[in-house]
Image (cartoon, rainbow, N blue to C red):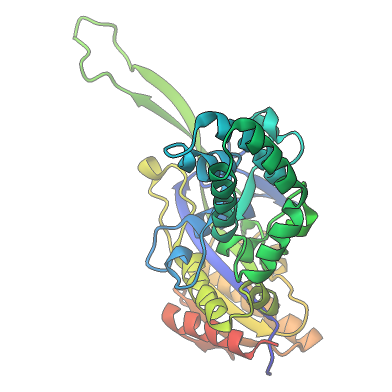
Length: 375
């Protein structure tokens, strides 16, 4: 099959005695599925750790990639503050409110709590910084600065639209992969070509309340007996099914039409999905794990998750989980005959019949090659 549109990535990861993703009460996130409560890792949690990873295959190591910055203080810290060493404070004070409102909306000058946390790319930040520099250095006093920035603000959306259309990655690589929504400027929105499902355990949730203490090393024998601190936390263990879809033409378009850049992104993303774990409670649980299974599928039909293989909770056994996945996939093939190309790797003593098996470098290269075939 040629011209694949979608690359689907299915994974199984095993974690022991961890608290990978917490809810607002400090407990592990959960998901009822098939009448059974499962432990869950949110897609937001997974994406953050992939995009922030300090790793040989980090997204920021890719040649041609542009950084992205997510903050309520983009204007303050990246546009206005760098000018404070060369521009009078009263002129910057005249400029800043209009820049805040241009980026964050009409109420953004009321303080950072009134602003939406936005994701902007390095090209957009560089342009904003150069505009602030130009307006500040060409204004002789605050009154002139205020007049100049008011005129600038009227044309802001049109001018930044031109910048975004002329830059390959205006919102940075993070926006190009995971999208962006800006409520104050719908034209700044970017559709996400990488779609990430919440991971969940293929079996019922396995949890334990962990009672722990902290001792005072300098306590004297005559002091009160007992611990200085007594607390509880929740620990979980589980075999998690994960699912990611990459819209290859969408990714290529978001990379400014650069197929080589998009291929490098896909190559590195396969590595990150396989090797980067959510990083909660690092010091007390060491939650480091690599995928026990990765199945890649390339095709031009609408993607479909293989989560149905685990709608009925199964035993927490890797080999059985791989077998269930293979059986569910075979049933889908017999019913729908969508004809995807496939590659996989696994640590299990089980196979996926009819699919070529390889190492992680093999799968990453194979995935990158599919970008060249996408139409």
